[in-house]
Length: 271
Ligand SMILES: Nc1ncnc2c1ncn2[C@@H]1O[C@H](COP(=O)(O)OP(=O)(O)OP(=O)(O)O)[C@@H](O)[C@H]1O
Ligand SMILES: [Mg+2]
Image 1 (spheres, rainbow, N blue to C red):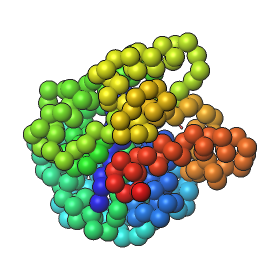
Image 2 (image 1 turned 45 degrees about the horizontal axis):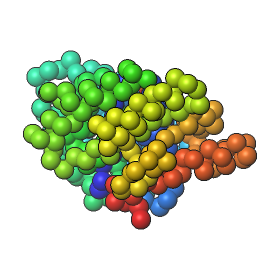
Image 3 (image 1 turned 180 degrees about the vertical axis):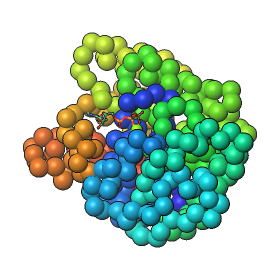
Image 4 (image 1 turned 135 degrees about the horizontal axis):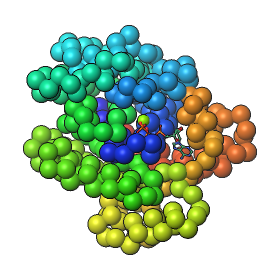
């Protein structure tokens, strides 16, 4: 089982919307998908429940941290939903290692039953984020084209204790950083500047999530536009091709599908 953590240390950039769309898209494509919501806001759980497409586990995700024997049900598409206990984990400092170990072991036990697991993470540094990074095979970081959002990536990568580079070196050598994925991209001068800053900086350019293995130009870089259909689909639990306004949805799906497919390809679960 490949494990995707959607993570960045910045709120409101589209982690939950992206986790939701990717989990549903992979399941719709015929893969066995486990979706885990470790953010107590529940913005991955709510739309998946609403879609009616997944079996909802009767344990909440906090149990994956606290119960060394927690077991997830087996079905083609399973959601382990958020629960209020998630917000309390960080305060129990003395149990941090046990929480991370329990979470990692729960995923190992589930690994024969699923092709891929998608984890939506909270925006702050928290034992939940660390446990997800220690357990994941891949990380993807949506951002908005703003300075703070790009700063959130630098922190996610470089933090001396809990940054991806440190975790990879010390705890999880298998972890692959898939890249930075600009989301809610709009055509305005501010965003155009943000995009050209990213494209013009070799340190960032090489880390942008791209449509091809060796990106050469801006056209090779993935981005998700800001579209009302995406926001409404996230609320309603739908993928754009299921949306009622077929014309608007068709255009959005044309832009979105190659990105969602590429994530599957980079994780080795799609051809
Ligand atoms: N490409 C997009 N176009 C339009 N709306 C979007 C897009 N991506 C996300 N949204 C909407 O923006 C809002 C914030 O997105 P989301 O909840 O996914 O962010 P988040 O990073 O998970 O936030 P948090 O840090 O609070 O968990 C949501 O209403 C979501 O549906
Ligand atoms: Mg979220």
